[in-house]
Image (cartoon, rainbow, N blue to C red; front, side, top):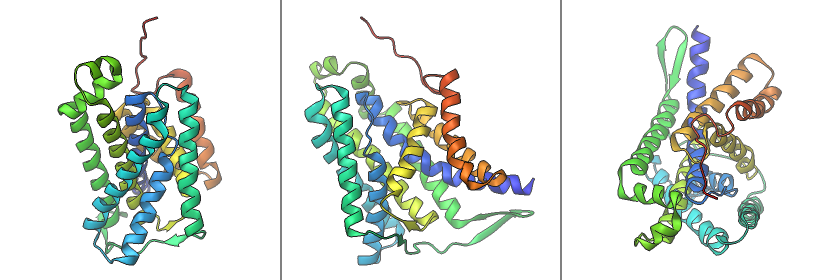
Length: 292
């Protein structure tokens, strides 16, 4: 029992990171109906931005985290301006290819500046606390889960309870009509990209703290897992992205606990196929009826 509870705590930590990244995919898809395939590289950029800030200017985590979120948020808005806004009326595949190109630019720029793996400096004195029996939780796990849950609850409130969130949901329903009603569509979409990217940057910081070896390819490796989480939960659904992130985290941790680690990715992607066979729109997704 103690072992199972310990693995559940580990899954909570990993799932929190996946859920934050998955939210970026879901926000963009919910507003534009497109996948931002550069999002995984923005997550990686957040980890390296944290590394650079800490190495150049020894700053505490309470300053580094919002600074990285601002940097990656601006990067997300730039991607929207360069890769998506000029191609809104073009075939969707054009925007997807452009987004992939932006991701490749980010990944190769970071790789050219830092071709080797880097060790993230310690930003927190990690202490281990015994809950009961052999079950232990570290200060870092508490921090990661607390920050991630706080950001997710804040985003859910913004989307459901504020005028900005109402504008986002309205644009997702009928962009043309919303523009005629005076809603600044371009600004709302750009801010949506920025919010999603800032959450990805926060996930990059938390990932660097939890798994303190970072490298340029991590954007693709972790980004695809978060994309799977978003699809499993229901792409475009904020709460679905959270659920999918924790589900993928639990599956990965459980797989490694009972099987060789080489089965981890196989089980995670197989879960995607099984769920989509029975729930094509994801666990919390709903089919969209379109008038012909």
